[in-house]
Image (cartoon, rainbow, N blue to C red; front, side, top):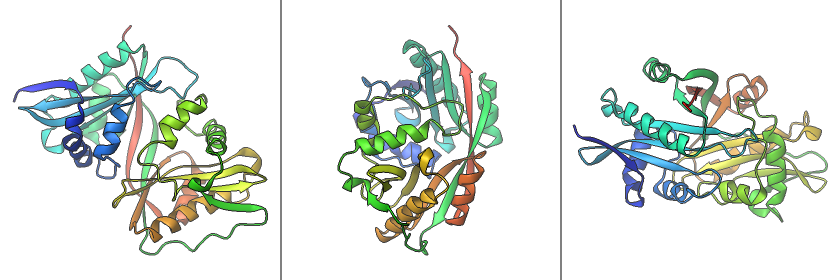
Length: 304
Protein backbone atom coordinates (compact mmCIF):
# COMPACT_ATOMS: atom_id res chain seq x y z
CA UNK A 1 0.00 0.00 0.00
CA UNK A 2 1.28 3.44 -1.00
CA UNK A 3 0.05 5.94 1.60
CA UNK A 4 0.11 9.71 1.16
CA UNK A 5 -1.32 12.53 3.29
CA UNK A 6 -2.28 15.79 1.59
CA UNK A 7 -4.62 18.77 2.04
CA UNK A 8 -8.30 18.33 1.23
CA UNK A 9 -9.47 19.56 -2.20
CA UNK A 10 -13.03 20.30 -3.36
CA UNK A 11 -12.89 17.27 -5.64
CA UNK A 12 -12.49 15.06 -2.53
CA UNK A 13 -15.83 16.07 -1.01
CA UNK A 14 -17.89 13.08 -2.12
CA UNK A 15 -15.23 10.48 -1.26
CA UNK A 16 -14.29 12.05 2.08
CA UNK A 17 -17.93 12.40 3.18
CA UNK A 18 -18.19 8.66 2.49
CA UNK A 19 -15.15 8.02 4.70
CA UNK A 20 -16.72 10.04 7.52
CA UNK A 21 -20.06 8.25 7.26
CA UNK A 22 -18.33 4.86 7.24
CA UNK A 23 -16.35 5.68 10.37
CA UNK A 24 -19.01 7.79 12.12
CA UNK A 25 -22.45 6.65 10.88
CA UNK A 26 -24.38 9.23 12.91
CA UNK A 27 -22.28 12.21 11.80
CA UNK A 28 -23.88 14.78 9.50
CA UNK A 29 -21.23 14.62 6.80
CA UNK A 30 -22.28 15.97 3.41
CA UNK A 31 -20.12 17.14 0.50
CA UNK A 32 -21.70 20.59 0.88
CA UNK A 33 -20.68 20.84 4.53
CA UNK A 34 -17.12 19.71 3.80
CA UNK A 35 -16.70 22.29 1.04
CA UNK A 36 -18.09 25.01 3.33
CA UNK A 37 -15.70 24.00 6.12
CA UNK A 38 -12.74 23.96 3.72
CA UNK A 39 -13.59 27.50 2.65
CA UNK A 40 -13.09 28.61 6.28
CA UNK A 41 -9.30 28.23 6.15
CA UNK A 42 -8.77 31.99 6.60
CA UNK A 43 -11.36 32.49 9.36
CA UNK A 44 -10.42 32.53 13.08
CA UNK A 45 -11.08 28.78 13.19
CA UNK A 46 -8.45 28.18 10.48
CA UNK A 47 -10.19 24.95 9.56
CA UNK A 48 -8.21 22.49 7.49
CA UNK A 49 -8.78 18.87 6.51
CA UNK A 50 -6.02 16.43 5.65
CA UNK A 51 -6.77 13.41 3.48
CA UNK A 52 -4.97 10.07 3.65
CA UNK A 53 -4.87 8.28 0.31
CA UNK A 54 -4.01 4.60 -0.15
CA UNK A 55 -3.12 3.82 -3.74
CA UNK A 56 -5.02 6.94 -4.85
CA UNK A 57 -8.19 6.29 -2.83
CA UNK A 58 -9.17 8.40 0.23
CA UNK A 59 -9.22 6.12 3.29
CA UNK A 60 -8.96 8.61 6.17
CA UNK A 61 -9.35 12.25 7.09
CA UNK A 62 -8.13 14.53 9.88
CA UNK A 63 -10.23 17.62 10.58
CA UNK A 64 -8.19 20.32 12.30
CA UNK A 65 -8.41 23.91 13.40
CA UNK A 66 -8.35 26.33 16.33
CA UNK A 67 -10.85 26.49 19.20
CA UNK A 68 -11.34 30.17 18.51
CA UNK A 69 -14.41 30.58 20.75
CA UNK A 70 -12.24 30.26 23.86
CA UNK A 71 -10.47 33.21 25.46
CA UNK A 72 -7.58 30.85 26.28
CA UNK A 73 -4.97 31.05 23.49
CA UNK A 74 -3.23 28.17 21.76
CA UNK A 75 -6.03 25.60 21.72
CA UNK A 76 -6.54 23.44 18.66
CA UNK A 77 -8.51 20.36 17.67
CA UNK A 78 -7.76 17.27 15.62
CA UNK A 79 -10.42 14.66 14.91
CA UNK A 80 -9.41 11.54 12.99
CA UNK A 81 -11.61 9.21 10.99
CA UNK A 82 -10.26 6.14 9.20
CA UNK A 83 -12.37 3.74 7.18
CA UNK A 84 -13.00 0.62 9.30
CA UNK A 85 -11.47 -1.70 6.69
CA UNK A 86 -8.26 0.37 6.65
CA UNK A 87 -7.52 0.57 10.34
CA UNK A 88 -4.38 -0.94 11.80
CA UNK A 89 -2.34 -0.09 8.69
CA UNK A 90 -0.66 3.14 9.84
CA UNK A 91 -3.25 5.50 8.34
CA UNK A 92 -4.26 7.08 11.66
CA UNK A 93 -0.65 7.59 12.80
CA UNK A 94 0.28 9.28 9.52
CA UNK A 95 -2.75 11.56 9.69
CA UNK A 96 -2.14 12.46 13.31
CA UNK A 97 1.49 13.42 12.71
CA UNK A 98 0.51 15.68 9.80
CA UNK A 99 -2.41 17.18 11.75
CA UNK A 100 -0.26 18.03 14.78
CA UNK A 101 2.32 19.62 12.50
CA UNK A 102 -0.40 21.78 10.97
CA UNK A 103 -1.72 22.83 14.39
CA UNK A 104 1.77 23.73 15.59
CA UNK A 105 2.17 25.89 12.49
CA UNK A 106 -1.01 27.75 13.46
CA UNK A 107 0.44 28.48 16.91
CA UNK A 108 -1.51 25.84 18.83
CA UNK A 109 0.15 24.50 21.95
CA UNK A 110 -2.58 22.05 22.97
CA UNK A 111 -4.53 19.63 20.78
CA UNK A 112 -7.96 18.29 21.72
CA UNK A 113 -9.48 15.21 20.10
CA UNK A 114 -12.78 13.37 20.34
CA UNK A 115 -12.10 9.63 20.59
CA UNK A 116 -14.64 6.83 20.26
CA UNK A 117 -15.13 4.80 23.43
CA UNK A 118 -13.66 1.57 22.08
CA UNK A 119 -10.57 -0.24 23.41
CA UNK A 120 -8.75 0.14 20.09
CA UNK A 121 -9.41 3.87 19.68
CA UNK A 122 -8.63 4.71 23.31
CA UNK A 123 -5.37 2.73 23.16
CA UNK A 124 -4.40 4.58 19.95
CA UNK A 125 -4.92 7.98 21.59
CA UNK A 126 -3.00 7.07 24.74
CA UNK A 127 -0.18 5.48 22.74
CA UNK A 128 0.29 8.84 21.01
CA UNK A 129 0.49 10.81 24.25
CA UNK A 130 -3.11 11.96 24.65
CA UNK A 131 -4.68 12.17 28.11
CA UNK A 132 -8.30 11.31 28.83
CA UNK A 133 -10.77 14.04 29.81
CA UNK A 134 -14.55 14.17 29.87
CA UNK A 135 -16.92 11.57 28.45
CA UNK A 136 -19.89 12.36 26.22
CA UNK A 137 -22.78 10.16 25.14
CA UNK A 138 -24.39 9.89 21.72
CA UNK A 139 -28.15 9.52 22.14
CA UNK A 140 -30.85 8.57 19.66
CA UNK A 141 -34.58 9.32 19.72
CA UNK A 142 -37.17 7.51 17.58
CA UNK A 143 -39.51 10.07 16.00
CA UNK A 144 -42.07 7.58 14.70
CA UNK A 145 -44.04 8.56 17.81
CA UNK A 146 -42.94 12.14 18.55
CA UNK A 147 -43.62 13.88 21.87
CA UNK A 148 -46.81 15.93 22.14
CA UNK A 149 -46.71 19.55 20.97
CA UNK A 150 -45.32 21.84 23.69
CA UNK A 151 -47.58 24.34 25.41
CA UNK A 152 -45.81 27.63 26.25
CA UNK A 153 -46.62 29.26 29.55
CA UNK A 154 -47.74 32.89 30.01
CA UNK A 155 -45.34 35.42 28.52
CA UNK A 156 -43.43 32.81 26.47
CA UNK A 157 -43.44 32.73 22.68
CA UNK A 158 -42.00 29.83 20.67
CA UNK A 159 -40.44 30.87 17.37
CA UNK A 160 -38.42 29.21 14.67
CA UNK A 161 -34.97 30.81 14.46
CA UNK A 162 -35.86 31.78 10.88
CA UNK A 163 -38.59 34.04 12.29
CA UNK A 164 -36.35 36.02 14.64
CA UNK A 165 -36.26 39.72 13.72
CA UNK A 166 -32.50 39.76 14.29
CA UNK A 167 -30.13 36.75 14.65
CA UNK A 168 -28.15 38.78 17.19
CA UNK A 169 -30.83 37.78 19.73
CA UNK A 170 -29.79 34.14 19.33
CA UNK A 171 -26.10 35.04 19.34
CA UNK A 172 -26.44 36.78 22.71
CA UNK A 173 -28.24 33.77 24.19
CA UNK A 174 -25.76 31.29 22.71
CA UNK A 175 -22.78 33.18 24.10
CA UNK A 176 -24.42 33.46 27.51
CA UNK A 177 -25.35 29.77 27.73
CA UNK A 178 -22.02 28.52 26.36
CA UNK A 179 -20.17 30.02 29.33
CA UNK A 180 -21.91 27.44 31.56
CA UNK A 181 -21.56 24.44 29.25
CA UNK A 182 -19.71 21.53 30.94
CA UNK A 183 -16.30 20.78 29.45
CA UNK A 184 -12.57 21.29 29.64
CA UNK A 185 -12.64 24.23 27.22
CA UNK A 186 -14.58 27.39 28.03
CA UNK A 187 -16.41 28.66 24.95
CA UNK A 188 -16.75 32.24 26.06
CA UNK A 189 -15.46 34.57 23.39
CA UNK A 190 -16.62 34.95 19.79
CA UNK A 191 -17.45 38.15 17.90
CA UNK A 192 -20.88 38.50 16.32
CA UNK A 193 -19.54 38.51 12.77
CA UNK A 194 -17.55 35.33 13.46
CA UNK A 195 -20.62 33.69 15.06
CA UNK A 196 -22.70 34.49 11.99
CA UNK A 197 -20.09 32.93 9.72
CA UNK A 198 -19.42 29.88 11.92
CA UNK A 199 -22.95 29.03 13.04
CA UNK A 200 -25.80 31.04 11.52
CA UNK A 201 -24.61 30.52 7.93
CA UNK A 202 -23.41 26.92 8.24
CA UNK A 203 -25.20 24.78 5.64
CA UNK A 204 -26.45 22.12 8.07
CA UNK A 205 -28.20 24.56 10.44
CA UNK A 206 -31.94 24.26 9.86
CA UNK A 207 -33.36 27.62 10.93
CA UNK A 208 -36.95 26.41 10.41
CA UNK A 209 -36.51 23.58 12.91
CA UNK A 210 -34.21 25.43 15.34
CA UNK A 211 -36.51 26.76 18.05
CA UNK A 212 -36.24 29.65 20.52
CA UNK A 213 -38.33 30.72 23.50
CA UNK A 214 -38.73 34.50 23.61
CA UNK A 215 -39.51 36.22 26.91
CA UNK A 216 -39.77 40.01 27.20
CA UNK A 217 -38.17 40.49 23.78
CA UNK A 218 -35.07 38.36 24.38
CA UNK A 219 -34.21 34.75 23.57
CA UNK A 220 -34.46 33.04 26.96
CA UNK A 221 -33.85 29.48 25.71
CA UNK A 222 -33.03 27.77 22.43
CA UNK A 223 -32.42 24.39 20.83
CA UNK A 224 -30.41 24.12 17.61
CA UNK A 225 -31.41 21.71 14.83
CA UNK A 226 -28.89 20.40 12.31
CA UNK A 227 -29.83 18.30 9.29
CA UNK A 228 -28.30 16.96 6.11
CA UNK A 229 -31.40 18.13 4.23
CA UNK A 230 -32.24 14.50 3.51
CA UNK A 231 -32.68 11.89 6.24
CA UNK A 232 -30.54 12.74 9.24
CA UNK A 233 -31.46 15.10 12.08
CA UNK A 234 -29.25 16.18 14.96
CA UNK A 235 -30.34 18.21 17.96
CA UNK A 236 -27.47 20.54 18.76
CA UNK A 237 -26.85 22.96 21.59
CA UNK A 238 -29.83 23.39 23.93
CA UNK A 239 -29.72 25.87 26.78
CA UNK A 240 -31.46 28.43 28.94
CA UNK A 241 -30.10 31.76 30.12
CA UNK A 242 -29.56 31.97 33.88
CA UNK A 243 -32.42 34.37 34.78
CA UNK A 244 -34.93 32.04 33.06
CA UNK A 245 -33.84 28.65 34.40
CA UNK A 246 -36.08 26.23 36.32
CA UNK A 247 -39.12 27.22 34.26
CA UNK A 248 -39.08 24.23 31.90
CA UNK A 249 -37.94 26.30 28.92
CA UNK A 250 -35.20 23.86 27.82
CA UNK A 251 -37.78 21.07 27.64
CA UNK A 252 -40.16 23.37 25.81
CA UNK A 253 -37.75 24.30 23.00
CA UNK A 254 -36.25 20.81 22.60
CA UNK A 255 -39.69 19.23 22.52
CA UNK A 256 -40.71 21.74 19.85
CA UNK A 257 -37.64 20.85 17.76
CA UNK A 258 -38.54 17.14 17.86
CA UNK A 259 -42.18 17.79 16.98
CA UNK A 260 -41.11 19.94 14.02
CA UNK A 261 -38.52 17.39 12.92
CA UNK A 262 -41.12 14.61 12.91
CA UNK A 263 -43.53 16.78 10.93
CA UNK A 264 -40.75 17.47 8.41
CA UNK A 265 -40.34 13.73 7.82
CA UNK A 266 -37.32 12.86 9.94
CA UNK A 267 -37.69 9.43 11.52
CA UNK A 268 -35.06 9.80 14.24
CA UNK A 269 -32.86 12.37 15.95
CA UNK A 270 -29.44 12.10 17.57
CA UNK A 271 -27.81 14.39 20.10
CA UNK A 272 -24.70 14.44 22.26
CA UNK A 273 -24.70 14.90 26.02
CA UNK A 274 -21.87 15.45 28.46
CA UNK A 275 -21.89 12.34 30.67
CA UNK A 276 -21.67 14.50 33.79
CA UNK A 277 -24.62 16.74 32.92
CA UNK A 278 -27.30 14.88 34.87
CA UNK A 279 -29.98 17.51 34.31
CA UNK A 280 -29.75 17.38 30.51
CA UNK A 281 -29.41 13.59 30.53
CA UNK A 282 -32.64 13.40 32.50
CA UNK A 283 -34.41 15.78 30.12
CA UNK A 284 -33.25 13.84 27.08
CA UNK A 285 -34.40 10.57 28.63
CA UNK A 286 -37.92 11.92 29.20
CA UNK A 287 -38.03 12.98 25.53
CA UNK A 288 -37.15 9.46 24.39
CA UNK A 289 -33.40 9.68 23.82
CA UNK A 290 -31.41 6.52 24.57
CA UNK A 291 -27.59 6.02 24.57
CA UNK A 292 -26.13 4.33 21.49
CA UNK A 293 -22.42 5.20 21.69
CA UNK A 294 -19.89 7.28 23.63
CA UNK A 295 -16.76 9.35 23.10
CA UNK A 296 -14.01 10.76 25.31
CA UNK A 297 -12.32 14.11 24.90
CA UNK A 298 -8.55 13.71 24.95
CA UNK A 299 -5.81 16.35 24.99
CA UNK A 300 -2.11 16.55 24.35
CA UNK A 301 0.39 19.36 24.86
CA UNK A 302 2.15 19.80 21.53
CA UNK A 303 5.95 19.92 21.42
CA UNK A 304 7.30 23.47 21.35
